[in-house]
Each structure stands twice: as C-alpha cells, then as structure tokens.
Picture 1 (cartoon, rainbow, N blue to C red):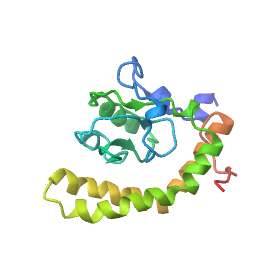
Picture 2: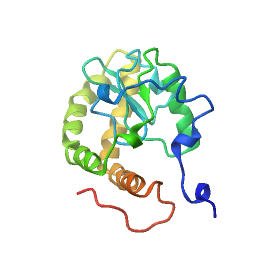
Picture 3: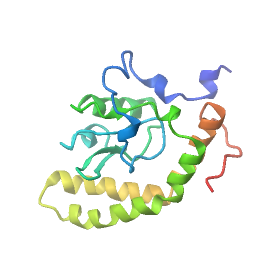
Length: 181
C-alpha cells in the first residue's frame, strides 16, 4: 500500500490554486470557537453564507458573529464544501494551516476548556430557534449539531487529530490513539 492509501490528507484535497486563492486567515485572529484541525477562521464574513455551502462544518459566533469551523472535514467532498465557503468570504478569513499551528498540548487545552464553548452555545439555541430570521432558525440546527458533537464524536475525532499531529497522518486502522487528558 502507498502512503496515500494508508493516510488521508485533507490539505491534498484542496483544488489546484488553493490555498493562495481563498485562504488568507491568520492564526493570530483565530476565533476561539474553531475546533482544532487543519481548517479554521480568523476574521471571516459575517453575512452568514458559510452554512449555505458547508452546513455540517460552519457556524457563526464571536463578537461579530463571524464564521468558524465547528467540525473538520473528513472527506474530499467536505473539504470542497469548506473551500466554497472560503471562496464566498470577502475577508479571506479562512485558513488551512492549522496543522502547523496546533500542538498536542493546545488540542488537549481546547478539549479541557470545551465547557466554555458549550456555555457559549446554550443561550443562542433558544434565541435562534425562535427567531423571526430564517437564517438564525437554520443556524440553530448547527448549534444543536455542534453541542451534540461535543458530547459524542468530537473527542474521538480530536484523538485522531492528535495521532495526525504526532505521526503525520490520520489513522486508517483501529488501534490505540493518544489520550485527550
């Protein structure tokens, strides 16, 4: 088997010309709600277009309700959806250099502090669910998805991401994974 068959590389799924074309976000501007992984946002569009293209990956939050990545893509199609969201961002606030920024310690710190994310999401859900705005009602589905993902699924995905940071690729086989705690 080749390396490509053993290891999935999300950045390799970017179309030719990316990230230079659409990804200009800066780590220093990263919104704290972004989950650890190769993709994140800094100062991103607040016109609520990201979920139109990547509804299982993008939400809105922070001081100006800019876009952020709440679930990392796990397939080429999901990467392409995130690319489309990035292409629609007039601020070019999406980034794809998280692998060179996140450390195992930083991932574990984010996971340890995930309660702050949950606390942030809690008051938004009832407000957006009953909103007169259709985009807020639609985004409330994303809030529910993110909250459920934090409870069930994100921990396993972050353990795989820790493996990637330590071993250079995502695991293809079941086996021991690094601990989050």
